[in-house]
Image (tube, rainbow, N blue to C red; front, side, top):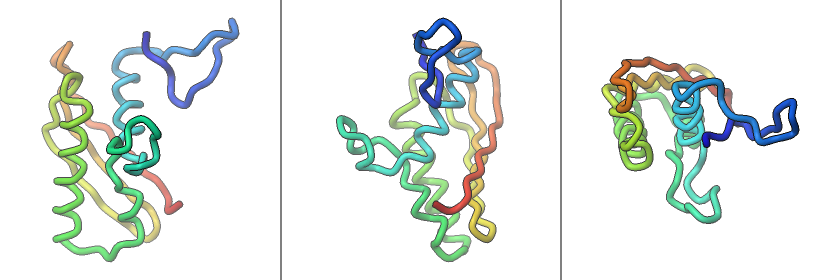
Amino acid sequence: MNVAHPYHFDARGRTAEPASDERHIRELIEQLLFTSPGERVNRPTFGSGVLNLVFAGNSPELAAASQLMIQGALQQWLADLIQVEAVRVESVDSTLGITVRYVIRRTQERRTTEFRRPAP
């Protein structure tokens, strides 16, 4: 059973499930991207640490390092579900934008998903 993110109850008072497997995978990617390592008690290495990049200076070197860091986290934690094809990171003012292009292993569908978060 997949659990919807953010966690909530459905109309029957049970744990809500995502509408589809594709949505569940998108939610997993979002959780991984915006969780800082050390934030989860039983999984201290889970997360990507990208929220720390919002206030870092923009540079091509930082973008390249960020892309590698995110791609590594996605491959470490979600490799059984997706194959990452590309990651793009951009920081504009106080907003962090991440674009992930991936293939869902079970269905071989290609997806491109964008995530944007303002500075915490």
